[in-house]
Each structure stands twice: as structure tokens, then as C-alpha cells.
Image (cartoon, rainbow, N blue to C red; front, top):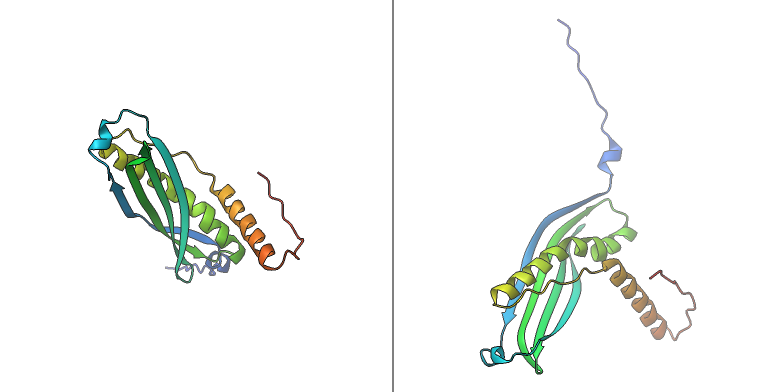
Length: 173
């Protein structure tokens, strides 16, 4: 009887291949306020809706980050708050062998794009459960938000350096 053994060399390319992993997606915070009920419910006017969205990034350990997308929806009638919903959808994301220059765009574009549908759903659900027509938030261009933040940071840096920096990067709209 002949015994054959196969030896496969370790693939070092696989060991250093870039990897992006979603460790967990969760609702971190959710609140609903209806400070002027029940009187405001008797007003028959269409509410004015204001939506604010923001992103936060918290490094946890080497290559592990918590990214959160926060949304605030305020509905007002006659300058009085009908309802206010604040939600924070978060996730833990792992970056392995990703070049450092690619991590920041992924944290501020890719991760929020993954989290945002959960946030939209949670906000629409809580508004509906409060007895109102659900508000479905519009899609967001997180790439555009990222570019805007870069341009704002460059403008702030130019102001603090006395405007001596004439190098400008023009990004497509």
C-alpha cells in the first residue's frame, strides 16, 4: 500500500489580503418625544418636517471601529413640536490589511451606506407606531458628504494657516 501525502504551501498572499468584515449591526439609541400632545393633535395643519443626519466613528482596537449614523426627525405644527425622533444606528466593522489611506473613506462612506437602511426603517417604524404616517427618509449620498467634509477641513486648515496654502483640490459634484 502506497501512501501519498499532499503538502500545500501556505498562501502568504491570502494571509495579507485585505478584508472588511461587519462584526455587528445594532440600534444603539432610539427616542420619541411628543411634548405638546394631546392639544397639538387637534390642529389640522400639515406639519413641517426637518431631518438631520450625522456620522460618528469611534476606534475600538487596532482595525476595529464602531460607526454610527444618527438621524433626527422633527415635525412641527404652528412652531410647536408635534414629534421628535432621534435614532442612532451603529455597527462594528473590522479592517484587516486595508491600506491606511482607504480606511477613512470606508469608515465615512461604506459603513454609513450599510447602516443607513436600518436607520431609515427604525425611524419610519417608530413614527408609525406613534400614530403618524411614517416618514421615509430620502437616500443619502455619503460619498458627497465625505467630499464636503474634506473640502470643509481644507478650508478650515487654509484659514488657520493664514490662507497661504494655495493648493486646491476640485472634486466632481
